[in-house]
Length: 510
Image (tube, helix red, strand yellow):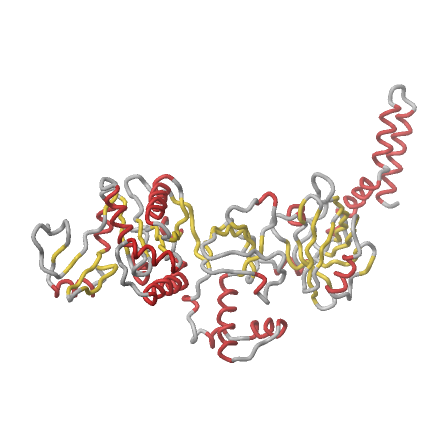
């Protein structure tokens, strides 16, 4: 006798017996209605078959996405999953399907593997991931009684467009698929994006709707790195409870795309979407590395939250094009609070002037010693002005930190990497130039009436070049449209540095 029939016969005997007992009529009715309901009978079948699944018998389970929670009765290999849920689908016909649930998003894509329709990806935060009934690689056999074997993703899309309300799937879980799965990610990684990404411009993204758009400097919380090409992440500030994780290109995949794109540009032959996908997989990275080193390709930087100690304050480094006002802003900021702020004492080869104190205003040293120190890497930045050499030493920045003061200094963009260390932990602030008209007005207010438009345009061009080339090193950006406003913004940043945990490279804290 079939397992379900055995249970029903036994239940009927019990309910019949209860109905004859005084006061048990209502209990008999409830018990009878419960075991004769369709969901319970389906669950009984699933449990009964699952108990024999280890002996090679196909098993089955059921869940309802409309319920407050879903349950799984099948975890064995080679199981068949019977999915009963209320889903509304919006489908794409470019290798992926995204499903939306009335109370949230299902979060799964499908793809073709030969003549099979398989689950291509399970996205973090979706119903499919939360229930755990569908896994990447599972084959969709049937949908509402329609055999999906031999159909293309495009044909499945057409079927989905005509469906709403209740949708039933029969799914085959392959043991071979489970063997291929990468071990789960150890935990959430926090990454600072070092490049801009827009899925609308990406021909390689498997599903544009699921991809996450971000800008350089955004903090991304990476939940899954199991796919070697596409990670899953949330952007800082996103409501995790109300949204799906998004797809972002992995570090290695983005590097390959950049290298291959560079190769295409050198080749001068545009390629279509399909050919580009195939050629990217076939291209030899070893042959392309000669064009650009992988280590020089910017992708992500792992970060962690860090609150500076009161006795070890983070320096504020101002960077911007010459003429934008960094020096003036630094000087005004230092004068506003000499008790808490200080600058490093610079080194110079020029003669000491009247009233200047060695070690206070400058470190006055001979030219040969200066050259020896520069060769030894003592200076984070140095240069020549009116035939004399000037330089800023890393040790003097550290000396200010040891005095429990905030070191404020200006550096050229090319020198930023020299201070971006665990010992110094700088907050790098880029001072961007305003519009041409505002910049001209600022120069006139400062009494600089002879400045030509070409000089002002040069400041704007330099600003764009610096931001494009070194923007991945910036912790913040202000546009110097108004001197007092910029000064107030800098003071607000100093307060944040002392009172708020901020994102820093994880290497600085380990």
